[in-house]
Amino acid sequence: MNKTKIWLSSPHMGGTERDFVNEAFDTNWVAPLGPNVNNFEVDIQEYLKEDVHVAALSSGTAALHLGLILLGVTAGDEVICQSMTFSASANPIVYQGATPVFVDSEEDTWNICPIHLETAIKDRIAKGKKPKAIVAVHLYGMPFKVDEITAISKKYDIPILEDSAESFGSEYKGRKCGTFGAISILSFNGNKIITTSGGGALISKDKEIRDKAIFLATQARDDAPHYQHSHIGYNYRLSNISAGIGRGQMQVLQEHVGYRQDMNAFYKKIFKDIKGATVFVEPSSDYVSNHWLSCVVINSNEASFTTEELRLALLEENIESRPLWKPMHMQPVFKESPFYGTHVAQSLFENGLCLPSGSNLTNEDRVRLTNVIQKFL
Ligand SMILES: Cc1ncc(COP(=O)(O)O)c(C=O)c1O
Image (cartoon, rainbow, N blue to C red; front, side):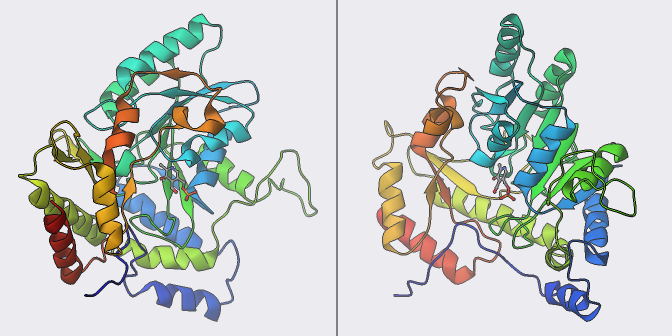
């Protein structure tokens, strides 16, 4: 039997990436600046279909770090962060010497719960410290409850840092994710819906914020013929080579979204009649997920198997799957941080599994997946 590895999500080149990279070599723009960087930013801006300004950076984590700096987060501050996410959403809060305050998920989108968010804000204010920002994440490509979270952000005048690392191509009420925050970020890591091998972007409607992000990302050099610095800078700009890959990838982004949505439909069909198994889907027509990763939750009271048994059965056939993100409030490194919520994120972690979702999965891969899962079930 064919046992080549089936990955959760692997890079998928469209074909034209090399042309942009070759052009960078041919013109000797082998630097963290050049036409690919500028054009990649324009491509992203045009795709998002809003009056936004984009800074291409070396990673999504770098974008989150600069986002916090630009929102004025400094040592001793508190920043609210969705607990159920990848650690990169929270780590930059600590880079700034601030404390993350974690908030549980709600069950519809698995993202930050508006009720617990408001409780957290009120309680932190009562304790004497108003949070400086809200890091909200569109997990696995599913938009968070944008209207509700935005209303709370406005009510308390606390800006949203929108972590769209996993949701490039997703939409809420017809608008693209990556346009909802005071500052938003994207990731082009190797496992994302499009990749530059490693990279990210910071997005803002305010051009001044975008310009400041580029200033900080290029070592904060003041305008002078010599090296003059009045701010601490970072080396966070995307290289012109990586941006060349990004330019090619932008040509296939929408196609990738379609393939991943097809993978979600594929899993819905496979698990349709399986007692206790629920594939993660949009809660209403307001939401369009890019289904970066398709996930299934197993209710162990109803199903005849556990998530771990399914994971091991897939592994046996050289198929990668992975438990959902372990919430940050359960991570040893954040054990001192406050948490507001109940057990929604914890229960998702304990009962959910991410399934192979790449846009490059073949029909043969799907047949293998079907056979393995059906045999197991
Ligand atoms: C939700 C989330 N935030 C942030 C990041 C960080 O992005 P990067 O790997 O580009 O630094 C990732 C993925 O890696 C992510 O999944």
